[in-house]
Image 1 (spheres, rainbow, N blue to C red):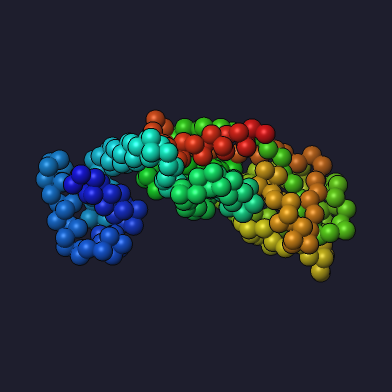
Image 2: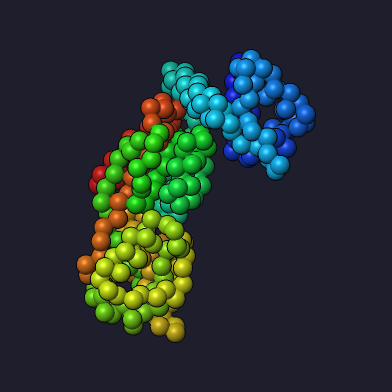
Length: 290
């Protein structure tokens, strides 16, 4: 099991980009960690990390071995999950990287439902844009990625997808069915630039020859307001939680002729998922398909 420890250490160094930061998290000295990595580099006959002026990064050879290491760790985690199953206990940890809208509403509800049946499974959620989610999957920091408007990327496979609608989040009492020309009567809240949803909306309004200027850019759900003008926020319908919107003092509406957004559940291509993550995938696939 000695190699498992160094595999986990290498994974952490790659994530942190630093021997020092990784050693702090591991509770060992940087020099000890450097010696451990040097030992396995000597065995492999190649350097795993390029040493930079600030920090380190995986070398070309290191990228290849790192993919093998995290695959091996996943196999061990999966074996542990199978043993736990035989004992009648569901254990495990699931790392999720998601587009920001899913971090509130949809995903917490899915996690709570799963943990009611499997209370010893815990979760970590990191939000990022679609490129960042892909990076987190490929470097082994995330088991699963749930993203909006995904792009095809080598090494990542899609487990489920849907073309979902985009809703509006409005203040209570507002008109709930709007036409494009009525956007000028609202303070429009857009997703931040660079996100898949923002690019989809920008392309749509450009094609429609509508000059829609955001009053605010945010990747979180903003409580609706009526001052100075009623706010209007675009949000993937799948990611909305009706109770949360009502607690905000808001309501859900629609804008005529809005495009649909693609939602995708992804993982590293060919990687066997830990048992807990695989079971959670089954639940998410069913949820996305409904």
